[in-house]
Image 1: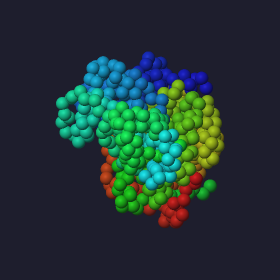
Image 2: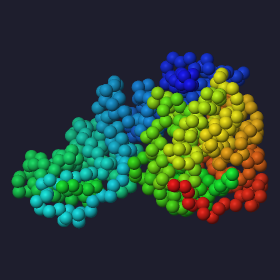
Image 3: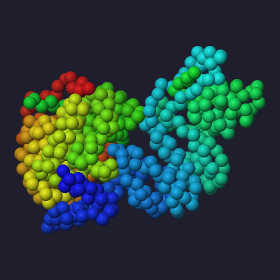
Image 4: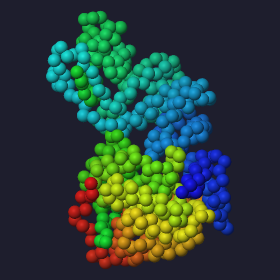
Length: 257
Length: 288
């Protein structure tokens, strides 16, 4: 079977744009040469990958414009082959390309917009869970509270932004002219509530609490973190308020003690 | 072998979810693209479950890569088996092709050289897949644009020999026969007549596009008249075979696609007896 393997490697090399001897193993006909026949596959390969990227990053496409987005796609396809059995996951490295390669790395909001789009894409088909109901909190014994830890819906992502990328993304989603770029720190969350993806902004206090909780911190550790923002008397009430909010918004799958 | 006949189906596409859920249109069955539902959760699987409750289904994959010289992808097979347990399809199909090598996926259905070495390689892999899934699978013929120098037989001889050695089944794509016949200069009817009748379980119909002297299998047009003619010939040769239309681009509103399926029903009614086209009442149950 070495001949078949070599043939497949040569064929794949041709699709990937590498020097390949595969054309010598293909028959030409009177109307169409071997290379023209191979080029149907090579053209189709890039087209399919581009369709996948366009499908995943429609807002980024709108923001960059056709010419720059085409450059981005060509660069991405040259840099990344697909190890996946589904095109759904092909564009997973686009943020890395945007962050690390000029001219895209010179436009810092691009990474943030791409990250927002990826969070929505991932929330769409992330794993289901039976989210907690608020009544379940009553079952926790008072002495267990400090060690309570939360397990969140797998779709939940905290997206810290250094620019007004979320308002830009929102305008792009509504096919409106995006606002002027402004440097402003903010935190947002994207998650799926039942079958619909949601998003909202976080206060600095809630962002600290949620980041701690998502990192596996206990309720006691969340409270300790919130002492950066609140006094000792109001901190537990604030922590409970955040916890109730997350449960009511169906972000929490379960509590463990 | 008695061939199960599901009737006339369509490929389930996301564009039509809401229409199907709201209207429950009269379609005998749906074919799903397996990879679209090999995801952790969310809307795709929720819609799938809702539609499966009302319609028989079959599963059709594009990434088994049965002809690859890479090892079989165990993770893919595990996910495929889990999906089959969820969907309980009447059958599972993929293509007689390779899609990946050295871990790189082309996301295309790439042709194979038609020779003894390839036959042995693929028949052995199909047996492994069938053992793992606990069921026979269907292999579909491709549209192809190249012929390898070291092919030693016709495509239909190659397909016949593989499914015979692997004891697997055939999904015969009538449009792909038409496309490949044009691109490789053979008579499509020779392909139809060359296939073992008892192995054929399903037909695909689709549209295509011309690119210079070649025809490309684009699934973006209606089924053309010569393919309908070939379909009628296929029905005469094989008898009643579960038939569906694939549409993957330039997708029309559901009623238009349903109207196109009615053409297939009409051709079948004109070609075969009503007895042959009887659809079993209990076809909603599939195979877990």
